[in-house]
Amino acid sequence: FGLLVLVCTAGDYAVSVRQSTPGADITCGQKDYQGNPQPFCRISGDFGQVAGACDANPACLSFDMEGSYGGYLKGAGAQQYTEGFSNYCKLQANQKCTGSYTFKRRASIPESDIDCRYTDYEGNLQSFCRINGDVPDVVAACDANANCTAFVMEGSSTGYLKTAATPTQYTEGFSVYEKRAGGTPSSG
Picture 1 (spheres, one colour):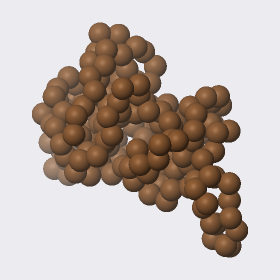
Picture 2 (cartoon, helix red, strand yellow):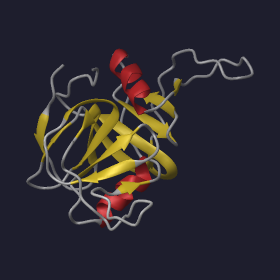
Picture 3 (cartoon, one colour):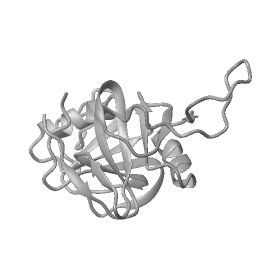
Picture 4 (cartoon, helix red, strand yellow):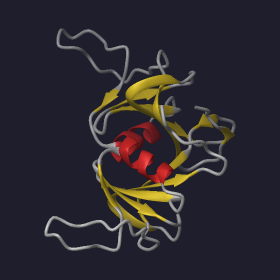
């Protein structure tokens, strides 16, 4: 599969699933169980919490999420294929980021639902497309649907496919992932 390289602007993150940035760890004063300094900075939390820690640390240019909960703050470095990880590259001037989606935290898209004939737990047909899974699962579903241009994550394990990435609204606990123009599917 191919990766798109973009020169980015400030504000959000470019997402590359099944990618990590090995060897680009930054430290933040954490210690191991014996009191020795850790050579990395691991943040326990969901995507939004790890993004908040990266935003607060001037040395942080990206972070690697390990699954859906917990990430490592990173400096500059090359990405490589790594199953179980996703890299979030800070979109800022003069930084090259790879990724087929843009991540925006604390946001949702209240309209533009894709109807994939989703049936809820009570057997009722719904007019939206809910995907139960983590970000790589929802990316795969969005990449496979020609009408999907974005998706909304509720927490870290439920996504909703969308036909448009706007309008967005501020919503705690939700994140928007928008396909990047010219991006390639994030399949491994």
